[in-house]
Length: 96
Image (cartoon, rainbow, N blue to C red):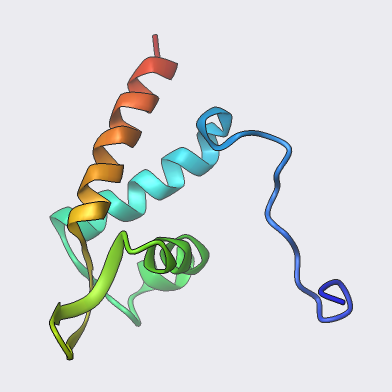
């Protein structure tokens, strides 16, 4: 059914901790959201839309700055900071 709708599943051939390209892409999104929150309509947001969507679904970035108060800037969450730190460690191990 999903194929009929044109949906392409993500590549599950490699475990996440071995997929360097994906780890770096998520690291870039989270690092940017942490250092320099970006607007929902920015060129960066357009180029990284899929990774931002995944991060938002997992609660790693958010537009919510207070209960029921939203902004138009993607910002990292506390969970996102924790995940960013774990990505730092994983990428460091791969570079050795």
